Length: 286
Ligand SMILES: [Zn+2]
Image (cartoon, rainbow, N blue to C red; front, top):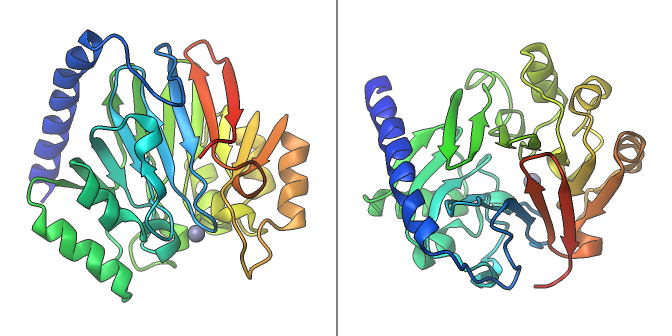
């Protein structure tokens, strides 16, 4: 198993290197979002109560982390996406994987990564059935590794042992780096997983933080925020019965960051990150 995963990883790395020149030749990418070819683009899509985060790297590789509760409202049609190089399911709850089958039916997907956790829902079963039918998609388990995406990279964080905790606390943790620009994304992780990462010393100083667990009061700790020191916090949230985002979380994020945005209030939120650490925020649109 290990050997084949390593082989897949090598294949992934090599194939991304191979596609980079192709995207460089296509020197005039067109997008409604006006992609800056010098910037990594991270868009928190407006999917209501759920998560879907689209990453476009300057050289072209595209990553989609979660796909919202339902079919994505406008697909990825505003983003000039031709294929999804890496599709990540942070964890198997429906508000994160509900739109994945539709994504796989619409775009070629090259690599799929998840925590390895299973679920009993129809939504999860349909996702797995679709994955099994798509033999062209290479499966990756989330384990500590770094995935190179041209000039950007994604570090996959260690997970708590399988079976030792609940699905939220085994959300796939990703640190996205493009030079000095750093983003931290971790699905619905709660105090247990965030504390584990602090103890493992894998929480860097970040530019952008996706508020874990939709701004829940169990989606942050003081120690985690002291390490992460985000400049921008984005809460992916819609109408919900849980009271997300919770007031204490909003207060904690406002205390530590310069900018706090929610998809419910601002619609899709796009951060353009530059290698020198600068960033621009764009909100609104589809
Ligand atoms: Zn969720």
